[in-house]
Image (cartoon, helix red, strand yellow):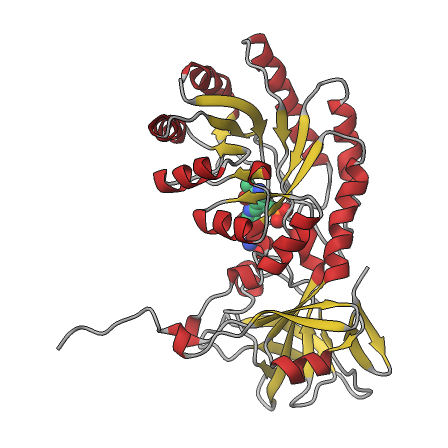
Length: 415
Ligand code: LLP
């Protein structure tokens, strides 16, 4: 359900009129809905009720402290991929014992920080990483909790840039090598084997690949048991798709119920690492039309948001729905919605049939995931302001960067 509604000809986010937000905080502006964030989390909780499970929000999707704090308050765990994300999670009130650490390139410093913080588990992705973890933990006189991220070689049927569970991807340990690596892990003095995990890709709309991956992982779990290796959890990663335009979003229950059935009688805690599904449709990017540039072979609406604010269209050819804040009754044209950045790839939408006026506000929908978190300062553009609406209130959750802040850490050579 969307948190946007048209009331007396104006678009509202929950009970706040978007023109009021633009007036108060300026544009470009990310707007998130507390109710939508909570509803997205609750959908997982409902489907998992009564089971031994933990939803670890993948921070990379949107790492704003206010969002992390909301999920932490609801009992979420977190999936991190860097020391920065760990620091954020802790600053937002996350329970360290509910944090899993993913990623192919963990440094020794990051491992130390995570061990000192007392995280739940390291999702280890290679043999050399296992060695390093053993060494680092030994240096601290600790045992590192471990889960191997295994690559189940399942096709998630999604965009090639965001499919991660195929053989040719850089992620995880090859399925055929996993048993041996577990045996090695079991022999290491500073490693405590906890679980097994996989993450097959992102924006997955067909639940079948999840079931296929679960089957393969459970088969491996049985083989490990035969080797005398007991696991206490299975982490099936994230990847739950959302509706951007006309996609059929699979209900979380439909994705999880068959998996929960497979887990019956196994005494394995289920971990999930959803990112996009928890935040994607709980956020929009609000932007103002600076110029309407017509008369050439194409008509351009130049807005004040750009690829540095929302990279997904430029990077993946992602299609986000775009709607006017104050819809006009008039003739529509096919608009190229573009930003001010000096790149031909700087577009937010192609060929959108809209009736637009210079100075109007428009909304890029489904921008809550991998929007702000992938933003940059390209063209020395301050990153957008972030707002969270909660009923009739709009809270500033990240102020717009100042221009000075953009070069404050730089210095010129001495003369
Ligand atoms: N766990 C691991 C180990 C991951 O690598 C990811 C995402 C997730 C969980 C969360 O996946 P999600 O539930 O959000 O699909 N920037 C791309 C998406 C990249 C996903 C990277 N890994 C995009 O904008 O579509």
